[in-house]
Image (cartoon, rainbow, N blue to C red; front, side, top):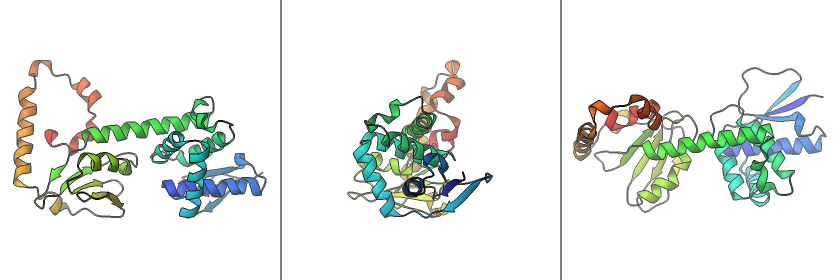
Length: 258
């Protein structure tokens, strides 16, 4: 029996649209969920597989979201969203099969207790990796004040975590105009003071404007570097321990390491 592989857009909306179409195909054609797969990309096509490209459809995605929230609960739905933000290529198939496992249970909200299921275990692993990166971005992200008063922060996360930074920083900085730019995905999160944050994609950051920092910013950056050097005890430096708490991956965008 052939397998149908649905190639979906690499986004939460795209993957949930794929879940909707794959589920419908599995039930209506009699193939079953074992012969329906999801993927966001294909490096090497497999034999005996039919590939279908699908576009993200908000209506279909919304129907799946309502079902997940009702049957699996808010926590499980949030964990699935974290997994869908992963950079791993198997995330779409993992999420799809985890949803199948959850909706087949009487108590679907306990789907992540089913650790013997390889798809559920993998989904939990993806969720954990994304959650850890969100936590690190919140800790290590650095804003710079531009001459126009806007606070700018640049990030290059492995996973697509930008949207999860909006609630935290809009709550912490409600009276500031700020911009967080994802360099890997060319998209940005905007916040105007006393307004809701929003996101835009396919944007190029003006390099000259991004380096046009205010006089006060330059002064405080120098002051902070001096503070970090002053409190350091040369004889007790431990580079390995420093890398454990603050990986090198994040340091190139932090003024204290510039």
